[in-house]
Image 1 (cartoon, helix red, strand yellow):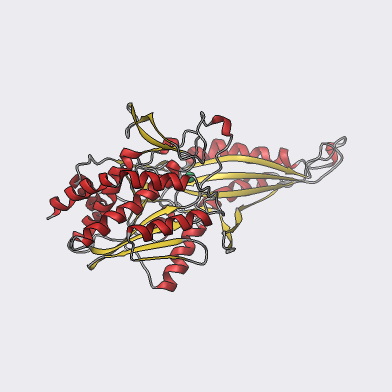
Image 2 (cartoon, rainbow, N blue to C red):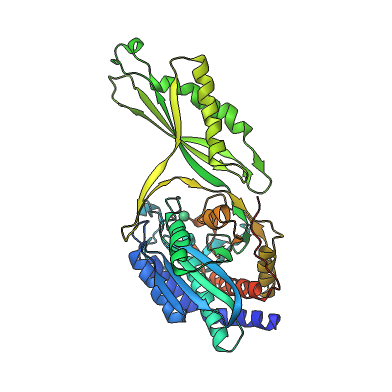
Length: 440
Ligand SMILES: [Zn+2]
């Protein structure tokens, strides 16, 4: 039974090659910068209705949900994509491609392992690799399942596609609203999540977390011609910068899979910011990456300790640290004033959900490899906060995301279409629960 269905998925996926390519082109031709996802949301909804999802709806924030009900009891697997993307940047860098053209051509592109380059059909344009190519693949995996169901195959569980707003600003407002508010209101839940973020056909098993801190160091203004009368907040910041870089950073912990935690001072601002005035405020914006086991409070305490130590030796020194916040407004007008925090997470390769996904991919003839993202994703909600089994599986390749070389391989989309459907079927076929809460 198992083998037969996997063969069918492989065979059927190939028949949808031109449909999925055309749909991805349409998605790319519909710009959807964060906060402006309305038009693309409508495209996603229309396509899900077209391929036969049983229920499709949009929530008050503008997130979309599509459901395919199985014919038998089973798990709900959420396939998640974000609908927004970053700016194309300078059009001059796009090597002749229109970032919103969705052009298809044969071009030289990396293989999954980045060991060689191959000439193959690609779709070009902003978000092809982050994440419109992956989102289209998840929707067409649904089309495969609908077809199997129509043929009488007993489908176990619920296939759920979710398209969320505003992933790129990295506070997860869309994802948090969807899971914590919309799901609760609708009586929906999920057992596991598959993210479409770029994974080069590998199973991705985690990423570091992220916290944005703002340190403000205080001084006192004086005339720029008489600096000895003031307290220069920039000079007072020097010790802080030195200690962050030379003491705190080297002492940060390391995870065997995700790498070392890091801290990076990325913006320095001062005020009043006029050449004739000694500044009385210096603001340091910090990008802090965390590994499982680290907390926001813990990471903040490390910085506070440095500030306290400097203040102990310098009665003039005054500073404070806080987590940065951002005000985000969705295209429907829903607003969140939210802390800039994303939780770290990882799932063991021998977690039963990962093993089930591995069997599925082997079932369709794929060689299974694993990886971890350098960047953060909305999986911080499902895995990092909700501790639900979560994996990344996608035809898109990380090295093209956010670049002017943004593109996706059509051959990989077809393979991942079958792969996503196989992962769903494999999870439904398992005896007993394979959805144990994540521990880290
Ligand atoms: Zn991105």
